Amino acid sequence: MSMNSPQAMLDAYWMPFTANRQFKAAPRLLVQASGMFYRSDDGREILDGTAGLWCVNAGHGREEIAAAVGNQLRELDYAPSFQMGHPLAFEISERLADLAPGELGRVFLTGSGSESVDTALKIALAYQRSIGQGTRTRLIGRERGYHGVGFGGISVGGILNNRRAFPSLPGTDHLRHTHDLARNAFSESLPVHGEELADDLERLVQLHGAETIAAVIVEPVAGSTGVLLPPKGYLERLRNIATRHGILLIFDEVITGFGRLGRPFAADYFGVVPDIMTVAKGLTNGAVPMGAVLATHAVHDALMHGAESAIELFHGYTYSGHPVACAAALATLDIYARENLLTRAGDLAGTWEMAIGELRAAPHVIDIRTIGLVAGIELAPRDGAPGARAHDIFVDCFQRGLLTRVTGDIIALSPPLIIDPELISTMVSMLGDALARAD
Image (cartoon, rainbow, N blue to C red; front, top):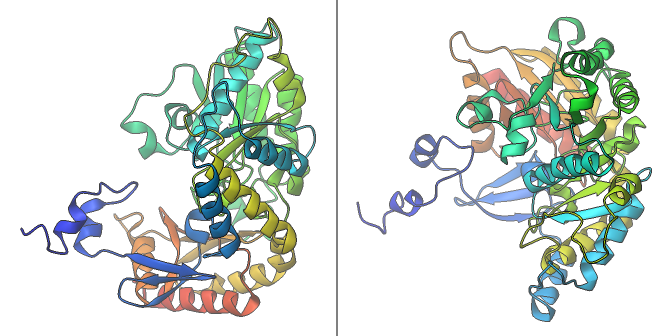
């Protein structure tokens, strides 16, 4: 095959979370983006129903971010973060601390959500050791949870295909997931049934002993496994159990952070403050890779002892606090503040819920879940072919001008927060047409 042929040009790139051979036989390529729309390589407009990959909260092509990144590249393109610093890393950390709920006032900067999760788990272990609880080495996740693809993240995560091919860290365990179609299908707002599932943490305490458990990590809303909402009272109950047993509670807000639910963070939305919180994605509007871990003063200060010349946490990344990422993040937070995007999803939530609810009567739909500007539309699987129907609908939507996200037999929507009611209606109509065409 000629190296100049269209097919050969695709061969070198080993794509993540993609059926590579299937994709390269019929590629879907995006070449430009502005506002609410992508443009494909064949010149079609594609309405972005997923904010890229849950990250472009302020819409595409924001000139303010581009200018900030360009200026920063010219002024200071890179600075080491080990034993050195630059002003923007301290400025973005202060901005995040001011935005965060409760006492989450200490910020460790990373390069992604996966890095944030592994960092949070390390901080939890270091904290327990620092307060004399060195036997607390066990980490608890939840079934159907997604916490990135580091070995720590897949170990506490609960997506089977992410775990089967790789070994997990020893000493991890999992709460049961909260998805209950039999009792909670087509719930309005949060599911009514399932608060008692938080008691799984009590069960694991009885099984392993509280003295062995360092932390429990959950997504307040599980995004990557299909927009699984917490039952009413579940997060509050989990918070209380963790506190009672000296277990740190970690919220993975890589998806829910920065306005997705109509508040700055899901912790604000649910009124439950964790001890540690991970963020990424919307932090820079997806423009430059960046993440962060927010910890309470108590967690941070527990490590600040011993000789002042001693390193308190033996952890970090080459790109922690990268100056260009910091510039992008600061410009992004300015946009969020100026355009009230951290609360806009709350203003649109009623319109969004009503519009998505129109799909209840569409073929194959067995459940609909919405919160803020997120929706999960669950489909009945084809006999013997789980996930095939949703994937076909995803491809059909793309070909006709709508980008959706698919996970198993669930179609997920999470558009940029700049969306308006007219485009919400357009999105729902396009998806409804695709459902009607599907077999």
